Amino acid sequence: MRKKTWKKAMICSLAALMIVSVSGCSSKSGSKNTKETKKEEQAKETKKKVPDTEAQTSAVLSLSEVQTLNANDKDKKFKEYVSSDTNIVTVTEDGIVHAIKAGTAAVTYTDGSNQYTCNIKVKKRGMVYPVFTMMKGEHLDIQFSNKDSGLSWTSTDSSIASVNAKGKVIAKKVGTAVITGTNRENVVYQCNLTVNKKIKNIIYLTFDDGPNRYTTPKVLKILKQNNVKATFFELKPAKKDFDLTKRVLDEGHTLAMHGYQHKYDIIYRSEKTYHQNLDKLRNLFFKKFGVWCTLTRFPGGSSNTCSSYNPGIMTRLTKKLDGWGYHYFDWNVSSGDASRGTTPAQEMHNLKKETTKGHDSVVLMHDFYNNQPTLKSLDKYIKYAKKKGYTFMPLTASTAEVHHGVNN
Image (cartoon, rainbow, N blue to C red; front, side, top):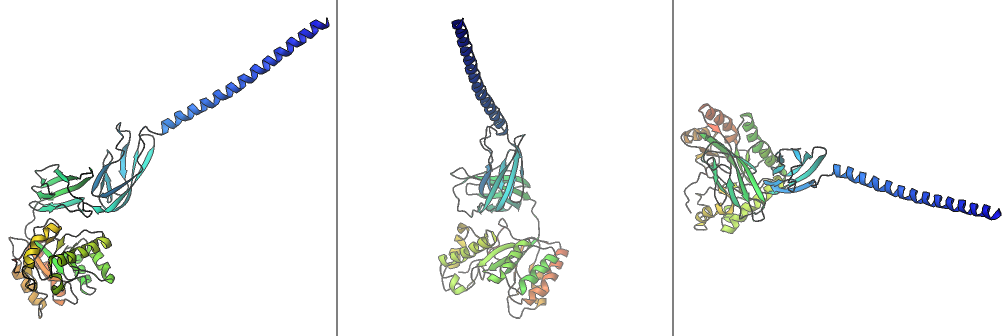
């Protein structure tokens, strides 16, 4: 009896151990399966949130550069691109951004479920005409402030505006066209071009030798009161007058260069000296105001004889200026305000006599200190010319240049 009882007890104990063992194995396996299931579910959730193509979050562009955001998005999962500031960056429905102005902007977009942001920085340097308006018959030489070169150029509509291998654009008829240049590294620059109808009988008011604390603000006030834009051929401003140069730009006038200095006995010593006189001022304007100036006027005009101490210098300079990236303007109407003894009445007489229809008028005036003849006749001249049917405009990089005959 005892043996049988002992055997039964042993069997029951073994059975209990087996049950516990099996139960323990089942518990560990179940725990492992639960963890794997959670990981799989998390992976599935992550896959839903993150698209196959990684979203672009930043970009740095040169001025006028175009770039496609999310270029690897072949399936076009990203859409609804929007720029936070179209004055700095524009963007198409396909995510092609165009750098319009130096600064920063954000482009937001979506994949249908999530929204993303790409922070874009536009550098000051690049192709200087991201957007440009010109008149039929004018031409524009594409300029760079970052010394890029060797680009291949195309126009979306050569019947409106053609472009040659050197980047010279010719406006042929009214309309819009996109001028595109691609460099050797496949960086693409773009100019959104508008061609308007040619206006007849234009007067281009130009002011030399400023800025000046007394005269320039008064000239700007008269121009603003008459809703007229003009061109200021400035010398190097004193630091205290930087605000005047900024005001010229802010009020929509063209900033042009007369030179870093005006001393005839220095600036016309050599081609190199004159070149430096321009570059130094352009670099200053670019650094301080972010404007790449291309328009200039020789002190004394291209017909001056005050440079005769260096025979032939003006002949050489006028031939080389274009290759240096500058366009020079003389004048075909002189106010005479720089001559001693000129009265406001005499200045008005000069202006009326020399302003004639049938061609555009580039008017020479000055905003040096206390130029009373111009300050007292400017408003009258503007009102007189408007009544006669003239239109006032500022010079631009595409305006047909007015040149004198060279005397040296």
